[in-house]
Image 1 (cartoon, rainbow, N blue to C red):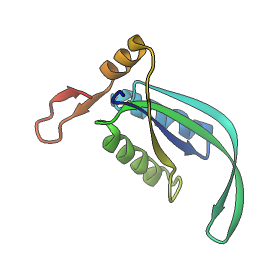
Image 2: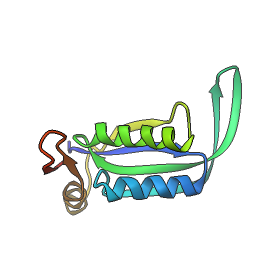
Image 3: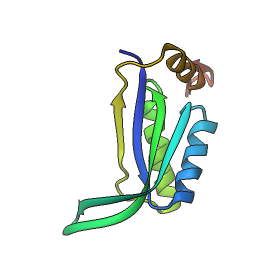
Image 4: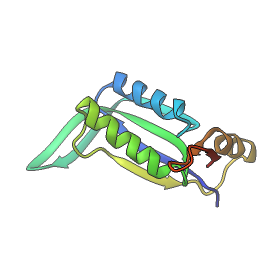
Length: 121
């Protein structure tokens, strides 16, 4: 098992997905974010079954960085008027190319809130 995880999240608009992806990578919270645009979703919300076109983001990150990834996604939706309850799901990566997993790990850093130091996640 590795510290690498994939976080799934969605946005209502493709431009929001691109902005969120850039934010996560620029902050070193994700090594890579892939965007699947124009995905159809059918879901239960409040009093009925709804459907929508969404963009799915596949966020490649690490377990230590997850709390900050979740916080960044939640804050993004708050600031942009996005989803009231955003989808944020973390899935473990059981294995993968050692070169890719090494790159992923070295591309993500967790900034210590107390010291301001960057630590590889």
